[in-house]
Amino acid sequence: MNDSVGIVKTEYAHFDTELRLESGRLLGPLTLAYETYGSLNAERDNAILATHAWTGDAHAAGYHSEDERKPGWWDNMIGPGKVLDTDRYFVICSNTIGSCKGSTGPTSINPKTKRPYRLTFPALMVRDMVRAQKLLIDHLKIKSLVAVVGGSMGAMQAIEWGIHYPERVRSIVPIAGTGRTSPMAIALNALARQAIFNDPLWKKGNYPLEHPPADGLALARAVGHISFLSDASMWLKFGRRFSIRDGMFDFFGKFEIERYLDYNGGNFVERFDTNSFLYLAKALDLYDVAWNFDSLSEALERLCCPSLWFAFSSDWLYQPSQTEELVAELQRLNKPVEYHLIESDYGHDSFLVEPEKFIPMLRDFLTRIDA
Image (cartoon, rainbow, N blue to C red; front, top):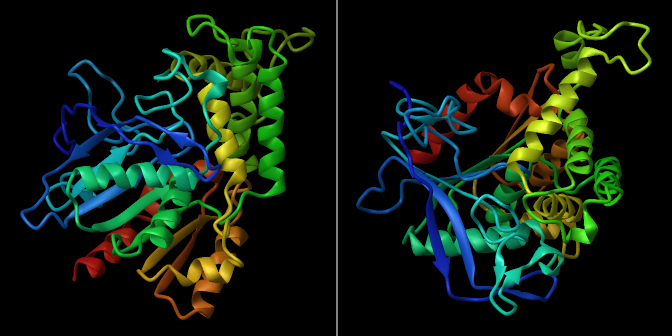
C-alpha cells in the first residue's frame, strides 16, 4: 500500500431537501455516499471531483480494510504521487443518485410510504446526478473545483458540471464520453432491459432483494459488457479457444468468451441491484448535452473553462467521432479545448485498463490549470 491512500471509509451526506429533477418531479430527502482522499487546503480550492461510470461507486481508491484484496476502481489514478496526487489535491468521489451503492436510489426507503421506492423512483437524467453532487460540494464548503474528471457516464457528468456550474469549475476532463447517446447504444440497452423484463423473478420491479432476477440481470450485464470490449481485445484474451471443461461437439459446450461472460454476469448479480441498473441505463439513454437548449452550440457556449478530452481508437460504444463532434464545436466557439485520440485495443474499457496512455497528458494539463 506504499503508493495507496491506504484504508479509507465511505461517508454519507444527508440532505433534508427536495431536488427538482428534469422530469419535473421532486426527490428528497437525499443521501449521497462519498469518499475523499488527501486534505483540503486552507483556501478550500484544491479539490478534484472524480465521477464514476454506469455501475461504479464512491470507492475510487484505497482499501476498506486490511483484508480487502482489490482497491478502489481508479486506484491507479488516485494517491500520493499519482496523477490525481493526494499530496497536492483533495479528491472526492460520490456515488450518483439512482444507484444502489449508498446514495438515494430505487432500493432506498420512500419516506412517504415507508417502503422501498422500486419503480416508483423517478426517472433520472445525468443532469440530476450533477445537481445532487453540487449539494455535496456545497456541504463540503468547497468554493471551486480544480477539475471534474471522469470516464464514460463520468465524462457526461464532467460535461454537465462545466456547462451548468461554470463558476464552480476551473477545468473538466471527459474521458471516453459522448455528447448524446447513439441509437446503437440505446439499442444495446434495450436488449439488456428485455433480458430483465423477461425474467419471471423480476415481477415488475417488486422482487425481494435477496431473490433478484439473477438470470435476467446476468444476461443484461453480458450485453453491456460486450459493448465495453472490442473485437481486438476479445481476440487477444480469448481467441476462438473452446472451454477445456466442455467437449467441442457437446451441444451445450461453450467457447472461453462465453464462459467469461457467464462469470462476469454472475459476479455482477451479487453486487448490483437490478432496478438501479435499469434506472442508470435509462439515464444514459436520455443523455443529450443539448437537452433544454436550442442547439449544441448554445449548450457548449456556456463551457468557459479549459477542457481536456480523450477518446479511444477501438471504442465502438462511444466512438471517437462523438467526442470529436463536441471538440470541433468548442474549437469553432474559440473555447480552450485540448483533444487526444488514444490508440488502444481495449475498447470502451480502455480508460480503466490502460490509463498510463493518457496519464502524461492529464498530468501536464492539471499542472497548467494549477499555474
